[in-house]
Amino acid sequence: MTPSGCRETEGICYVYTWNKNIKSIAKFKGQNRTCRNDYQNRCKGYKNGSLLLSNISTEDSGYYHVDLHNITGVLVAKFWFLLQIQDPVSKPMVNYSCLEDGKIQVSCSVQNGTDPKYSWTKEGISLMENCTYSQNGICTILMTSQVLREVICIVKNQISENISHSINVSCLDPVSKPMVNYSCLEDGKIQVSCSVQNGTDPKYSWTKEGMSLMENCTYSQNGICTILMTSQVLREVICIVKNQISENISHSINVSCLETSTSALAPTLISNELPVTNSTVEGKPSDNTTMPNKTKNVTSKGPECLNHCIMKSAIGGSVVFLVTGLALILGCLCTMPKE
Image 1 (cartoon, rainbow, N blue to C red):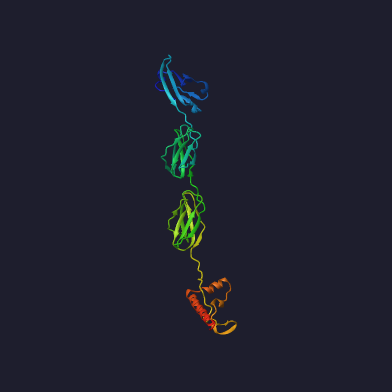
Image 2 (tube, one colour):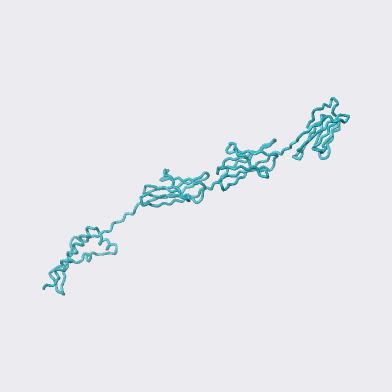
């Protein structure tokens, strides 16, 4: 600090008295330049009245004034100086938290540094968000995006500048393994659905035999993605789910909604010739013959064979009924007693 307005060569100024606020620091008179009290070992005076302080700290900040007197003791001039001592800013520390409303709260702080000024960049682009300062000087900003990349906090003051490490911020949950289900509809279509237990804002897509499907999802209230397929057979169907931070795929499944082919059950005639048997009346042989019931001539090897023999076709059944009924009528007429 150097006073002005006095030239010693003219003999106007002679005594320089330095003070901080109301505290005396040093007094320079001719060749006698001494510093007082706790300034003794860290101040130096010069012939022109300048004062040099060393090992300064923020405690040395404040108002200084110097009084200039001539050799007669008359005050010639008085000068005031404002000294501001700043600590350099330390490495910034960045933290973040995910809020319930979907925003990200990002904060930056330094342990050391006088009057720090904060600014932010994201992917090399300056952010315009203004800091909200807490009582301990932490700078906080709110971001609406759920994913931030390459976020850097920059802190500076009048004597220094420092930057934080670059961080990536995400408030998304990664998607879990997709689960695929399907059902066969009455109209012949296949309904295929895909869902995940975990994952923020999942996006669904499908492949069939390695080819992407263009069908759009219909979403249920619980977020299940459903598509309709007109084909009755699907092979190597895979559901792909992703969000901004992750991707996962389901197991490959094969789907078939074809009906199982079964043989129709219908009555069958065993022989084209109807068997003839002799009938007796009152224990005597009769010349008349009767047609026995057709079912007596069907050999059965279990319930399946019995059903197969009983129902072959509607026409075959009608023929059996007519032939059998005719045989019964003739049999009854032949066995009636004669008057």
